[in-house]
Image 1 (spheres, helix red, strand yellow):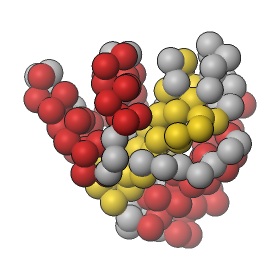
Image 2 (cartoon, one colour):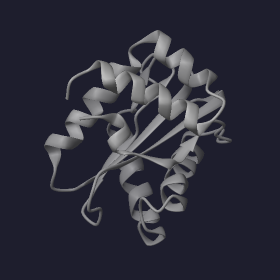
Image 3 (spheres, one colour):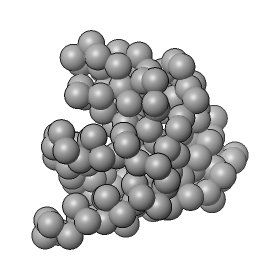
Image 4 (cartoon, helix red, strand yellow):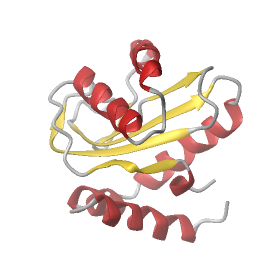
Length: 157
């Protein structure tokens, strides 16, 4: 699975304005709505599912990375948004540090395999300090997508 296959290019933001966890989730979902990745009528239910998932345990995996995710039965195909916060957000990360890089993943309710593969792929990719630094320094959505594209080429599907 290639990350660039699920990220909607118009749902990439190099400067998230959110200051709180809820604001970050809302801003990321808004990116998916504005890009046409999800319908505006689905926003509320997706936000609810994301918040329910966060109650189970933070998706702030540490090292400045958050991978909020949810499954939604009304979604037909997996979609993702990518956002970077310049100031960081207290996302209640596992390591207690601020979160700067956010991958929001929304998947159909009946596809656990691809959803888990995508989470694993994103997690593995962002474990690399150099990639995290490059994404945080990205000046445009196009530049950030190019970084992911280049990394995707290094790993077979």
